[in-house]
Image 1 (cartoon, helix red, strand yellow):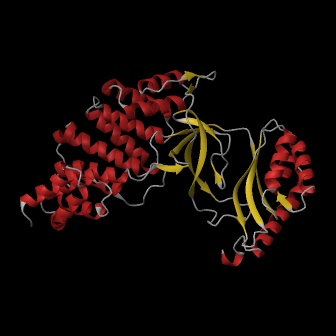
Image 2 (cartoon, rainbow, N blue to C red):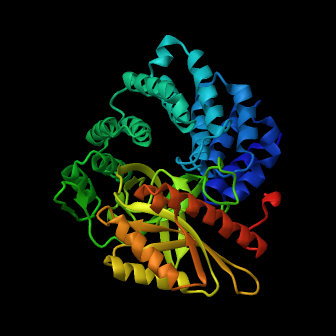
Image 3 (cartoon, rainbow, N blue to C red):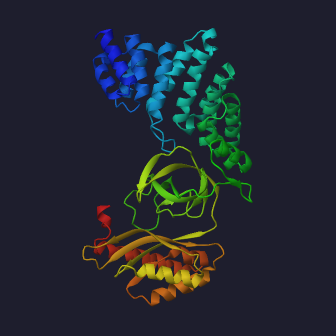
Length: 448
């Protein structure tokens, strides 16, 4: 084992912001973290300073193996492991095994080994239950019942801890229990005062419940001025468009998706904010999703990532909840054109013929090397007030005058109840994709 001076040098480097250097200096000690209490505590501190450490789980297991009944080690180690777990955004599927699982198991075993007096001590039993509850929350909805029990036990031990109420509010928020989330955040506010993360979560829950006045009060404490809409919702003007990300599955129509139909992935959608946490979706999904163009949605306050778009940093927020589904019809289509611009010209003609409120959005366009064949996929956004018969007439007229353009939109005929025309449109969809395969615009079915 190395000297205490070298261990202190590792910690001092990490505390000064040189965390990578701290871990390099700590490397000779890694094999003994399960044997020495001082090394175990030092590792917990280093990991809390740099939760991205790649061997966090491996070394954490060594510490737990040596000190799983020592609360003075388990509590800081579990807190550090939870920081590692938080690197995975909460809207992503939980791991089958990860840092949260290690923290949960360690906290449970340690709590069971405590004496009765230790279990009821806030700094011992209380923090073990809090960390256990947080770990269970991060492990996913299947563990909610146990997470709630752990939060309730922690708060039974000490209900004065505002941060513990805040953590309970996080669980309720992510599970869509906004009334319970609001109440937990209000209790946290009564104990902690106007702290930024707390106010954000309070405003999110209040917005979800339609309590606009309460949400505006929270925003104003954060320096964000707004007003109450006619519907009683918070409205903050002049917020630039943002991005949300939503989980999607494959559509059953067509061959455009390179992923299996059951594969879950994320799509980024533009939203026009009505407040810092809710707004209207402004772009359609390419795959099947719980939200689409025109829906009013609620998102979390912590971005999952930042995208650079047109020299502007645009936050990407995780979707929390659908506040109101839009009444638009989103009609999926596929088409081919010999010359670029033909479908855009058709889109302009449709907007003029139908009053300018029926946008045609292309989200996938592919061209062959010769540049004489262009495949495209998209959706036509049709307001609920738009008469579909008029749309059919305008669409078919526009296609007749453009012999180099083909387009199939089966959903239009299905909504009109024209079974024969819908069947022909489905056949046309398959025909367009077979031509696209021959042109090299889609992989052959045998290669999929």
